[in-house]
Length: 227
Image 1 (cartoon, rainbow, N blue to C red):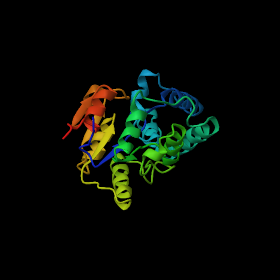
Image 2 (cartoon, rainbow, N blue to C red):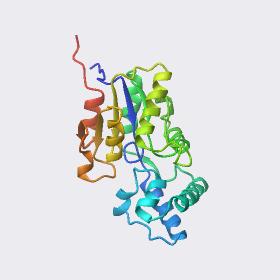
Image 3 (tube, one colour):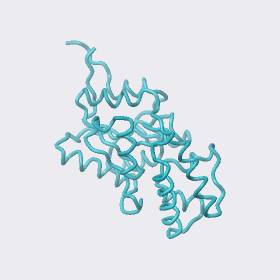
């Protein structure tokens, strides 16, 4: 049956929405925080870390001042570069296929991630999803010049617009309240996914909440009745 998306473009958060890199994140956090004399999080506590920029999380969760947080981010990134950012990462079930199907249906897509853009590109290249995106947008390497979700969303829309994409009906797919809050600044509706790293209340303000990929597909690519 033919499909037609109600959205002119789709923005994707990455960590917790498209990619599960929690094993590698927990490992790098443990090594980094122990190096700086901090207690590393348990797996259950990763919900406090995945989503916001690491620079901010190190301040909020580990009590670092901005200068020390910047140093720790550099340490964390160096560790990731040595070990490989795609190590242990996996796609959430059904999401890679959905991204490819949206591209095949002519729906423009962009990432809108607080993860450094270089890492976003490595991950999308690794999973062979880069061709499905018009642009890949993430934070700057220092996570200070460009990292706030509202600014990331603005940059994704700007790049899509420059590429000639219709941005009149955008939607963001994400898993944290930062996604909802950042998109709201630009009046972009959010489809909130439950398979990421979030508390139940974080979906407040989202236009829709889904628990599985089939529900998400129904909102992004609903079947169109034959005419």
